[in-house]
Length: 164
Image (cartoon, rainbow, N blue to C red; front, side, top):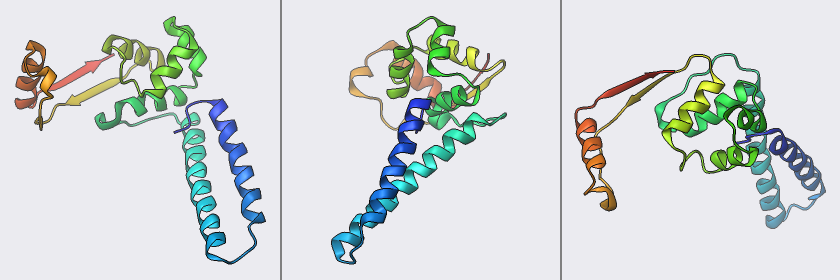
């Protein structure tokens, strides 16, 4: 997923380089055909990522699922017209921090920070979390009160709605 203008520029440059390399492969041997197929596959991937980024930049309404909240937050930032630097300025952290959050797909970010980011990116945002039946509780967390509470909530299939 392309997350900023710099990555967009690099992706477009890579596409140009791949197209040039593709046209230089002239032979019909197996290795040449395999090389062409690899170039075409990468070109298709880059094209999809560029299209997704540009579509997000021009989108007015977004719909997200709970299954991929981290990518949804990144998409919301792009669709809201914020750069990583602008978002960082709004929440009072260095730009590199937002880059780390997005690179790690918000894996180590406190929930309070996620809420703060969503508040900046959207005037009103409704998040619905449907907790499903847990498949297995990780061993290190089995003994904690917090994990026991989370398991009880999941078993009841509780819904939590946050209006921000």
